[in-house]
Length: 333
Image (cartoon, rainbow, N blue to C red; front, side, top):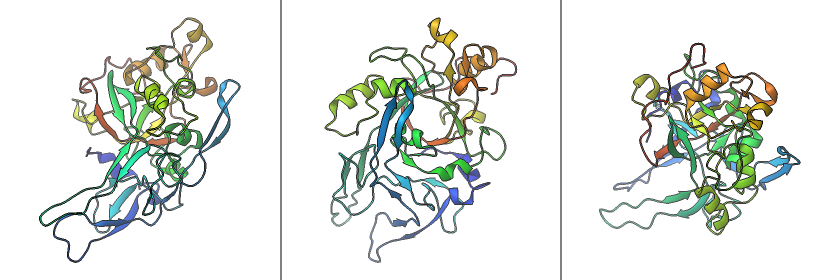
């Protein structure tokens, strides 16, 4: 479990962003877990829809599969405790669980194994296999899961539950500012595309090369192979709990504030829309070369408002310890 001190700030401007839950246990329980009772839960029954537009994005049609009830939040606090946990609901009901069309599970759920009966002195635990996402932090490859997003298109692309409530979370563009519960993430709109292209990156790449219009399941081996070989959007996280500088390690939050970048025509024509892997390199580029990198539609680079719940679960090569470069003066670090 990652320590994320920023989670205590989520209720600063949005009391509903942290759900107070209750907990019960069996009266004869010898050892094991208690049951957490949420007041709201996702509805996984709608059909997930993604129809690319003539230029891939904007999309012609978008509909998230799962929407959270008005009082649903994965960020929970047990009654009487100040501790906030990140506990996304990934399936509802007692089963059987649909891990192919996902009518009662999250879009990233590949398998669910209920706990086996436990004998005397034993404890067994249920497990869930979840499709991970590959990205970067401080130049190093990382893996994370994506469970909720506050924008419909982001929820579809992330295969996440749509929770617009999180747009009220503290606070847009805040990152490391006092009272913020968010950490930055750096997706790109129009990086390079092409399966097997080492410089491929971005949302258009995900749609074209990552089978984003299809349902994820263990039976969809083409989708799994594409994502295993670089088909994700390959987003960049800001601060990781592994960063050596305590200021940045303690700035980690799983609730990512999207800084969506768009390469200019000049950058694309010059072949400069290459793979980015480090927060500071991106911030320096945005600060010094607005002729190459902007926000969507040529807007100023920075937060676009929506957030995604993306807990980091590991790294695949070296532990992210420090950014590849120092920030230049006036870069928004």
